[in-house]
Picture 1: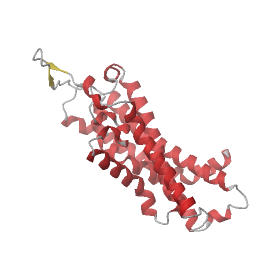
Picture 2: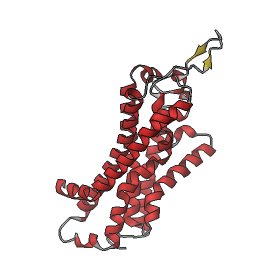
Picture 3: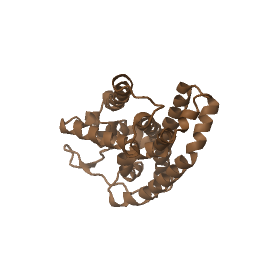
Picture 4: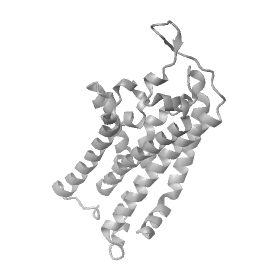
Length: 265
């Protein structure tokens, strides 16, 4: 299995590395520039405002580097040549490990580099308080009211950013898994590469229509998108669990209802 995973990694490492480097450069530039147009209260907010575009496009970053591989191996018949030498389940499983791991790696690296730049490269910000205390009439901070674990956000920004980046990597791996299962059966490369992105947009829209933004996958990815009063443990579970159900539903539909086969195209 280790040999299979190494072989699969060799096939995609250039694409994964190129995507990661390009996205990290974009994240660095955004982090260095965008915060200047905002009134901020904490240094880690530099990361938040600079990372906003990536909260939208992270499904593309997670899927594109590896989503194409299975499609082309099925299309050109290469996958059929592996049958005499490799167990089918092991072969597919190794590809999933590499796809999910690559999605995790890209999203984590992009998020973490933005955190590091915000905390250790960007000059200390000028704190600008934006809320008025109704009792005293004095300006007050809004971090505690708008961020889950707001005190840690202020006092331990590196640890906060690290844990958030690790969590975002996990969601990136789940989204990459959706792209991978699309590649197992779909004959359309465009659907494979953009399908997870479209899913996140549709899921976002549907929850928003019902006024339940706290359950969106993008809210689990970036909790500060909603007020902290609306956040609960279900906000971190609902989106990922729904995504897993969609993945399982797609697999059941293709295998049990349509009777599709991975080794046929």
